[in-house]
Length: 139
Image (cartoon, rainbow, N blue to C red; front, side):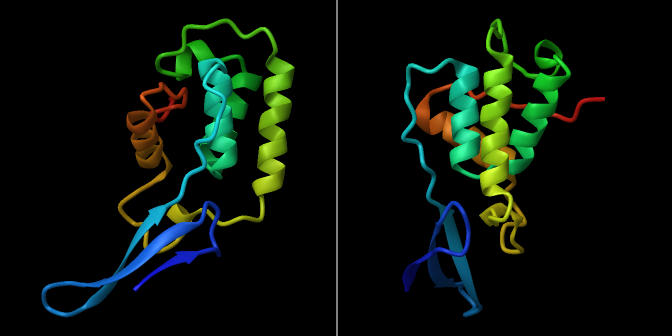
C-alpha cells in the first residue's frame, strides 16, 4: 500500500513493505519542493531550498553564520560576496517563523538513518547545484 503522509512537512510518500521474514516496515520518501528560480545566487538558492522544505536545523545554522559573518570560515564552497545580508537574514527568519510548528520527516522516529545533511546532499546530486550549508560541526 502506498499513501502520502500529510502530517509532516514536506509531505512523504509512504510505502508499506515487509522484510523477507515477514516483519512490516514503511519505506518513506520526502517530497521536496525544488521549484526554485535557478538564476538565484548559490546562497539565495540554498535559503529557498532550506525554507521551502523545512530544513530548520540548517536554516538556523545558516542564520547564525550570517549574523556572525562567518560564512567564509564555516561554509564549504562559499566564495561570494554578500551585499544584501539583512534581506537574506529576514528571508531566513520568515521561513523559520512559518515552519516553527511543522514536523520534519527526518525528525520522526522512523528516520534514524537519514538526517538533514543526507537529504541536502541528495538534493545537490539531483539538481546538480551546490548548496551552501555547514557540512561539519564548527569548533
